[in-house]
Amino acid sequence: MSQEITLVEVALRDGSHVIRHQYTKEKVIEVTKGLNEAKVPYIEVSHGDGIGGSSIQYGFSKDSDIELIRAAKENSPFSKIACLLLPGVGTLDDLKEAREAGADMVRIATHVTEADISAEHIKFAKNELGMEVVGFLMMAHMASPEVLLEQAKLMESYGADVVYCTDSAGALLPSEVKERIELLVANLNCKVGFHAHNNLGLAIGNTIAAVEAGASFVDGSARSMGAGAGNAQTEVLVAVLDKMNYQTGVDLFKIMDVAQDIIAPLLPEPVIIDNDSLILGYAGVYSSFRLFAQRAGKKYNVDSRSILMELGKIGVVGGQEDMVMDIAAQLSKRQE
Ligand SMILES: CC[C@H](O)CC(=O)C(=O)O
Ligand SMILES: [Mn+2]
Image 1: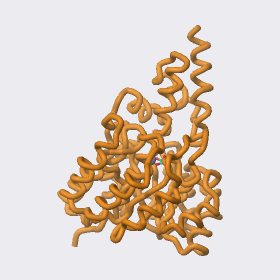
Image 2: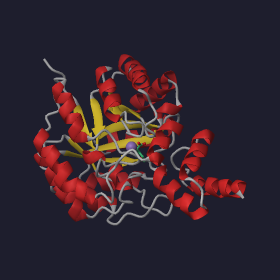
Image 3: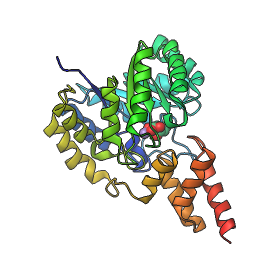
Image 4: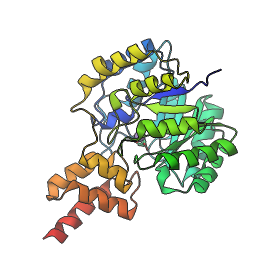
């Protein structure tokens, strides 16, 4: 019997970074309808930085998370709706509103060494709201496999149904993915998931490495619509998994149509591995910092790659977006 793999489509959340969080209800409805026809099991809908992310720090949304989640749910007879929440960015009240608007699943995201801050949110989502809950450990390349496991165990102990190894910077190599996922699968009772970024051109390869190591949840974004060089491209992933005899239940032609006819026209430019995305993966920097570095580079007349290299050197993590301008200013002074 072939193994079942559950796919989470993230173009309506990770892809929000690509359009600076300007999704409208109408666009979300169009994409959601297409994904339902393609029989995608989960669709994640939120500001790129999770519910509550609409702010001066991360960029303001056009339509609110709650409106977008409600619009998706009302047009989603098949797919379940997921949302993302970072404790400290989104609150328990935000989560309750998201649940009332129709979110079936929440992914509680923390830096890879900070799982303890997810306890309250995971327990609230699971026990008070009756949601499916995922623990999402970001920037997984910054921790050893053993530390990742220790943090994953915490999330599992709070009640997470699935724990993800999240390669936020697209910095992991296939052997490193394999090592991490194997360790998680061998030592957790809950399911294990993997989220890739394609900055080193490894998103599909790393996702396959994760699946072969035992991950049963994987993320994809149609047309690779995610931060940096995007995620594992959903339609490609569906085709490859099918050739390998894994079952996703997703209709290949229909997901290809969503990517080409609905997602591609949304993109300001095709999502490719440009110089800045490549440096994200090489230096190990959060994928959503690419656009911040480009803006800071223009403002201070500094090569955005040098900004990203410096951010990688000092180990900047999600939530420290304001550091990008500071570093650009410092580099510009050094240039003078
Ligand atoms: C919280 C923002 C971030 O984009 C989440 C994510 O997709 C990642 O860490 O890769
Ligand atoms: Mn991501």
